[in-house]
Amino acid sequence: MRTLYVSRQGCYISLKAETLIIKQGETIHGEVQLPLLEQILIFGKSQITTQAIRTCLWRDIPIAYLSRMGYCYGRLMPIERGYRQLSRYQQQLTAIERLLAARKIVQAKLKNSRTFLQRQQRRNPSETAEIAIKSLEVLAQKSGEAETIERLMGLEGAGAAQYFSAFGECLNNPDFVFLARSRRPPGNPVNAMLSFGYQILWNHLLTLIELQGLDPYYACLHQGTERHAALASDLIEEFRAPIIDSLVLWLINSKVMDTQKDFEYHDGGCYLNNSGRPKYIKYFLQRLSEEVQNSQAEKQPRWDLMTQQIKSFKEFVYQPSKLYKPYEIR
Image (cartoon, rainbow, N blue to C red):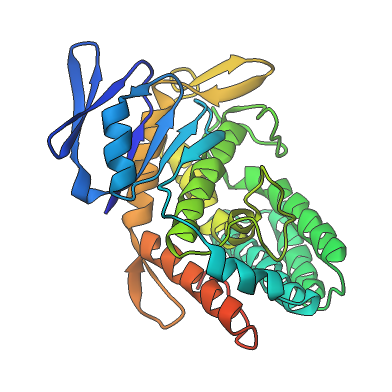
């Protein structure tokens, strides 16, 4: 199964028999058979016909509409898709059960950030990174003892600040400079790639969560609202460093991305442009297909690993005594 990304502007998606046709004017950019599709992500100003939408919904294929920068405006979901049963179990989780799971999630994020920096430290030693590594170890330990969600969020924020203070030390391409994390809007090409990557990864996780029947609006660490699928925000934490941060580092240090050709500046921020987005998505998909070692010391693609983790969280919802175990880099 695969995801269809439509990142070029002005595309028109139509249906012919069992195949989606992606055109821009008279140019055909791609054809995808419906039985192979799991979801569709449309970035910016492209259109899909009513016939194609109806067929996708009938085949249980959700469609997400995003801005060119990766912000999700909304999703079209089949009417049968729902999470009423599991939602009841999620709502019945006690405060202490949610806290215990949230502790594990924050600890995994901090440990993965620390492992990421340790790997880079072996290649390119840095005093800043060494300080961050030690701080992340202490913060991860404190996270395992936090008595409130508010305390956990504070420790997670402190860990992120330490981690990103050293992230720029890992870059060896002089065209890219990173001094601090900036989100809304991203202030430079490095932040633009981080923000875009987190957003598309978040959307992938949201789809996988819904496919497993979980209610994405009930979470343990983050607070859900009508506009915030908090469970996707919970489960993305363990994957930020191993998937997006490592991808951004590779794209920069391998000189795949070009600061002059792949980015644009507007509305006070920096964003991937029509050249940068398709390039980024290409390597993002390659990264998801790469095999890594799971908790059972088995090799599996990162996409399957994410599904496995969501199934693990699902088991926790049914049996809270079996505490959720997030993915940790080995």
